Image 1: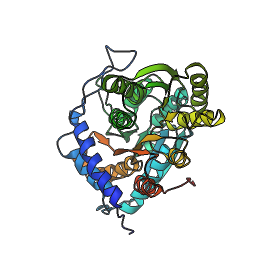
Image 2: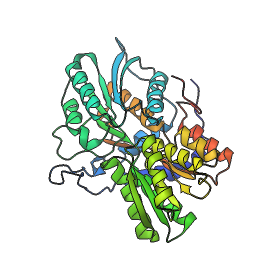
Image 3: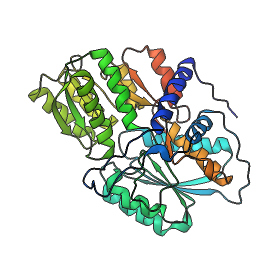
Image 4: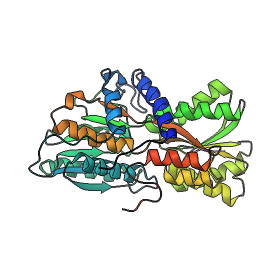
Length: 382
């Protein structure tokens, strides 16, 4: 087995973000989901018993410990997720999941059901298909296009006792569910919003005018964009010139940025709520030769974003230690197969830091190696 050794940057990052994510998991207030405030509420993350999150984080970041049981066949895993989008989050965590399973000595087969972020009905069709074919699968991993939109499908899958259901990219269990998924695996967008807010306030100061390329109305954008907006307005006295909903698409970021550059020249900062919109925004700024004048953010710290930072086209991004989600899911599968499911948290949170253009290339490289320790640095080859 090849051992994973963290760099000095990675060790420092692990110490700081481990404490922050653990603290966040202990105190998340109830909030209404948009559009149905009477029905849809998050469960507080106090549902994690003390120590469970930390234990899974430690297992995820440590050297693999082989599966202690035996298998008479390979386990079957279905993945329903928007992996056809620009962001490499989904593909990387697929690789982190499968490589960690291999390290753990677990035989597996996977079936992928891909969509784009905006293809809600296609995801619903996939969920129905997998639910009807329950005898084919042992584990179902669902990355919802949007939590509120896919809530009924998540609960339908969770209620099927033919397999275990895990949710990727959300950490907000819904209070109305009679049956919760076995676990939620994510990076906290609310925590990420605070991280990037504090960084930008420290770097840029007070009384800044900003424009925003937001995603799709819902939980994710409420945290990534709404919490960020509230933070910079309350702590820094920033003002919002314009908010554009780009539906998490590259074209949305491109069109929104062109509009901002033409109609709101007073905006010196552009916030982008995901990788795809950030890449579209950067494209529009470079075409207009404005990328040196605008401070631009992305979201997630994907390979595309880090390359844009290296080129001087993107300034900062809240960077997830991206492979944590897939690796933690593999550890959860192992725990379930060993009869230790009660040791697992309901909500797993990965680490987040800020990658920015004031870091050296060596520092960015070290962060990237830690974040993508399973899926690999550079362009994905699948």
